[in-house]
Length: 591
Image (cartoon, rainbow, N blue to C red; front, side, top):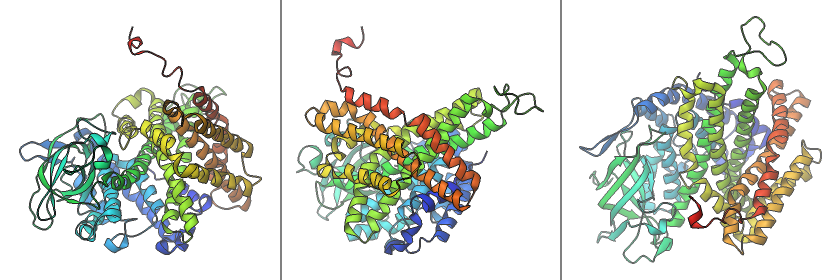
């Protein structure tokens, strides 16, 4: 079955829940009127269904091919043409800066398009996806000369970009990198070293690839404070000369096989410094944080695609009779959607997908406010919320995105375990999202070890103020008592961490993952309250699709009845502390 973009849900969230239709009142986004937004949603859904999705399964079966004779990489059949149409359609430039050919539209629209892309062809979408992060990094930190040389072609999709961080001996601990940068007399640098797991490091979609490479200068101090960032192009724009950065091979992966994951070798490749020396980690975090939000949308996109397949299957697959009596009396059996256990799986998929979408678009809306709101305090508060929500969006959406794809496979039974249906690919593709751009455990540690204490706790207090402010402004809101209980649970967890984690970092480490999940569930609870309220208002006014709004209210009830109670187990896990977790001696693991 073909992908059907959830455009009705997007509109509901943008206009009825988040008020994002008012972004056009902000100076940078005056063109983002509801008419334009609606056109983007409709055309985006059509394009991804008709152009991107048909290349997905064939791309998985064929994969990328490495050609050792010339160190080139061939992408699967159909990828070149689909990428060409993607670029020419303007999908690479949605929220990119206008001064370099971008459309300058709100970031929240990019979030939505990312979900559509990842639901239809995650592998292909990763090439422009990583490029977008490279654009933001270069625009924020690069010199005028570097920006003038690269940005227009990156934004148009004529060139792509990568980020080259990981090396064979180090991943998260980038202070251990060995790639060296030697200054040249002309102001450029000679970069030598090896990077691994580089998405889009080599391919045949474009003629040039701009690599953002972390390396160390000869006088670099030890650790992450000694890392600098360099632009290392595949082809040097000024001369057309092929640079000495080459693919040494492709990783053989369980999923995302249409995405070229490369080993990249540099032998005195020419590079140009971005910003100041030894400031590379700060600069690269611009790209990493953007990539983390994008990866969250990958999890959501695959979860939505899996839900649509499993829902369609459950409506058509006949198996046994309903426990309440035949629902399809003229047929030999009832469709499996009548069975409570199947409905439990489908409801979990549906309700979490819609809740995660709301949470992600909330973060996207705050990102736009942080960039464009005229009031400085509002911009600061919005930025606080984006910072604290980034690890939550990345980790929660990829954890549950993978789980929901896996649940969708279960709905299909044995059919889901075969390649006759696309859902087994979604499971394989989605597994990596919990790992790359910082494992979800690292996201949890970032949340607990850094974000909670940043600016004396201001970030988490900004988030709490937004949620409690809604309760004060809406004394009759739906599921009020349950939401208040969730907020109280989250506050208790924050207080426990403040009292215990600072004195003992292992307590922070033990609590990090359950705390991140508790934060995600609480924010989603708030989103479901807001969605239930908006749906109730629409029903009272006789507006919109009645069945859609009634389904929202039922879905909210399911979330609060069946899913939110997990918060109590998560709090128990947190306050129980590290003792049983850290108790085994080294020689007790295998006896």
